[in-house]
Length: 386
Image (cartoon, rainbow, N blue to C red; front, side):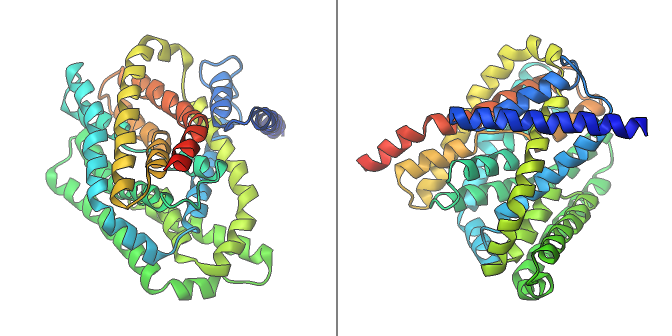
């Protein structure tokens, strides 16, 4: 009973604090994400007042936040649009992979950390945070812009690349044989392919099953199906976020609009919890020694992501303002990057890898939304000039 009371007190204090920070962000006209991250630093490992009792509960809420963010993003598009976008942006996806994996791999090799740590750091610098980018697109009203499908296709390309990359990385970290690694990769690819085929061929049957005139029933069905598929995807070495996103694209039309309206408050609540939990996992004392190197790596990554987004948007025939928005939307790093670093540190890849990755991700997780907000007037001016 005492444990439950402390859990309620801590979690209630976290939510109330987030509400206050959100109000301050609204008053200042900025995204609340950086404030949520700072709150996580203050009350997490090595912070001013660590909240140990509720950490496990909040971690589950954080995972749910990522799932709901990607589910609602998937509801914006249908399966045909996704396949068309992926096909037309495959070249941009490869450019994204080369430009953004290289900085992490190069820095690890220059520091003498070895090839395994280099592969891990390549993943840390490569993947954009789908969760933070989805939040930025929503907060700034960019969801309906012409460049958003291009951004979305790059995010999906990255997530699908992660479905191949993560089994390879875990195989290298564990020192497994090539046969075991090939089996893991094969299972991941098969899972993604099956879910895509189901979404394309049988989307109407899924809609018929989920559809309901009652909002309560509709909400339960949509969230339940998304969590079920996300859990299955995670079990098969595929990102839970990919599974939730694919559930979203399987639903379309009026049903998707109704589901979005119902999910919005739930998504915002658990998305805020996700950003706080990210800060919980970072010890401020370990960040300072590598802050300079992390800042340099972050600066390089900002440039490479900006170039990636502009290249992809230009290929899609989008104007300069949209190209700039696409590049900026891709800057944030977050959930995948921390997972990759955690795997590497747990396997003993290198003791400094975790601190560098945490500092790097924190800079870009905070700076990405702020940059998007700050350059919005400049982008508007470019659009008017064009």
